[in-house]
Image (tube, rainbow, N blue to C red; front, side, top):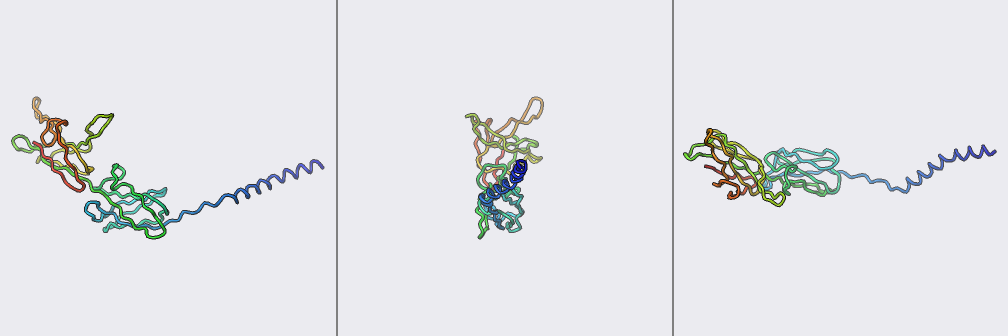
Length: 229
């Protein structure tokens, strides 16, 4: 009889474990499902207010949610979770939100609700520098490297950091695009003429080194002129 009692006790263990699991499951509230909505909006030029067509709009969630704006700058994205979400837009000729720390044009937080979800996404246009490089006789100088640099403080010291560059063509003309607005310096690099002669480097407007150079103001969507002799 003792052996029969032991067998019955063992058989009851799975039943007791199942009952305990069911009791525990009953105490844990179910995870609410996330409501998802359709959002619409307009991507626009923050300087001119004009719509930006064919801009890539992303909703920064776990899923890949994106769309391209139409000719009127309008876009629509389905399945966006309710709550605060980050929405970014990018387009050539405008500041890339992944490459700059500027607030305008970066990922922006929007509140998605069960009501109206129509948002305006600003994009800040980049700046451009152009000019000519002439010699003392007023003739164009070809293949001169031109650089755009900005001031940065590194280890307590002010240093110039390269941002972009270009070279002059056969007409001595250069242009440098897709620049971040703000103060910058423009300089030419030295170019050899022969074994004994070079065009020395110059800083705009007419300085021999960075310490006496004057910065220029790069404005969003604008072209700034910087000529050299």
